[in-house]
Image 1 (cartoon, rainbow, N blue to C red):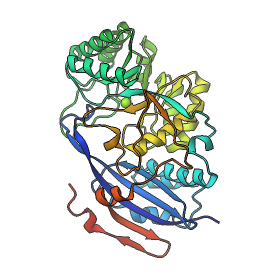
Image 2: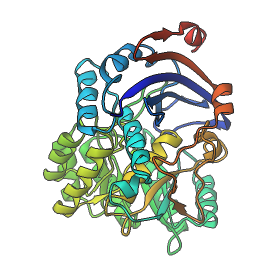
Image 3: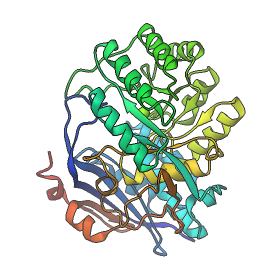
Image 4: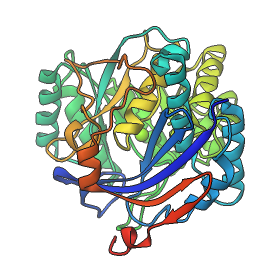
Length: 399
Ligand SMILES: [Mg+2]
């Protein structure tokens, strides 16, 4: 019987081609793509990989828990894996990002790319370009023109100003400038607040109503997360009020159960759970089925790193929504490009004129660039079924 034989954990900090200022984290300039990387190896040598944001000591302590819960276990039993991840969550650590590593093993066992194992048949998926920085209106027009030239027909921009008039001016200017050529959507990033490096606006229901009115007037394709994510009643009221579709649900740590309840109470028109945060691959697929039953739309969030991009691409390609929806493609030159985002992956996941060809290798389709991992990564924990090795020096000088 196949069992899990070894676990390795790494921190990875790889340089971006230029500094990147994420709109959702005011006051932050990123110079690296940073993540914790997990490698699971079975007794017959099959490897499962996944990675999650946080390249410091964020997850320094999870090695023993992983070893206790997973070594010697059947990696093919996703329900048992989910239960163990839930046990970690009860202990205070949400680590849904580990679940896709087991799907990597499962799909490799089956000799299929993951989306095909999940029943998907979309070898090529249509993308929208997802911008990540705030820009002045003229620079925003240039960005939209550039993405249009790249082959995208939809661009998602960001707003995060304290003055709602500024936000409305920005969406109106670019939408009217690109009218008839490119669709514009907007992410308000109100669902979670990342104020550790600077203050951020907090929208009320009234402000969100005025914003969605303006968005509808200029024909936006959708408005994403215009209210705090746990304000379920207010979100449902806004969605009922709005003339433009409301999207959201990317980082709900309780996963399917919470998102299904939100879907049934009318919180969003478009559900966007990210498998790395919101319950893993299995719960993402389950939610896509519920969205179909409820007459809602589905397309996952994927902004984190190359692992998050490809895991959620498999979910999307198998969701039943790939013919009618677009999948997110994070792209914010000069800082956030596939070559930096997909650090330590052998081939960056490039788009082709706004389309993405799903990898055809068994599993997630990730080949690790081991030279890049040796250069940018540090192993801080290794375990097999006999022994555990902690390498605290690997983490000693991290910020
Ligand atoms: Mg978003």
